[in-house]
Image (cartoon, rainbow, N blue to C red):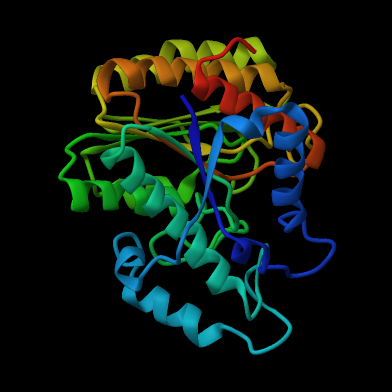
Length: 309
């Protein structure tokens, strides 16, 4: 069993300035750790093409897309929001990030190998239908979910978001699509400052306080997230894989470790094996301490393989 790893060199082009935490070195750090860990030998690396505008329109408004193309600078950068810079190469990178997710969905739904990881940037889960936010331009995972339904006729797609920041953009987009289950955990009173817990038929968002440790987080996942996914019986599981809740990451005050990411991934794999022939597509969201990010991705991929960590 191997994992398809989708990426593209153009995901490195979006490079606003050396001080911005969402930088190309994040991808390099993951690749370095994959090689160092020996895990690279079980990965099948694929270069993804760019998504089309028709793909983007599955989740974003025409007005928003037009605004982005109008604002794209010829040099330097402009700010789409206080945290999200746009350079001459940002749209190219963002389109390839979405394209990786589209290609990964195609692969797991049509090939015998049923697991894929998208090593891409910019991330996506803060991007709403009509607004860039929090380093995110296009909502990679929401587009992937809606594409899977449109192209393959799936009636039940589950998204699990364990980034430490609330996936407000994904929730905004998925709210109108009851056949997509969105489950997330996040740190309360942290960007984007959307702290209300949500629990309805297809959206479960649970905030935990700063200082939450592994057992605090695992308890919520085990008793509130996993049963919801299990009962939904998804035909495809998508993961917004953010690793910024790691104890070494200064972006948050969660105290998670690599083993926590292995644990949740292994649990999701078991549900995928039971309900959707093992079909999982994971896409990189946050994670800004480069060493912790690389080690956490390795743990995540080992969980997808079902190995002992």
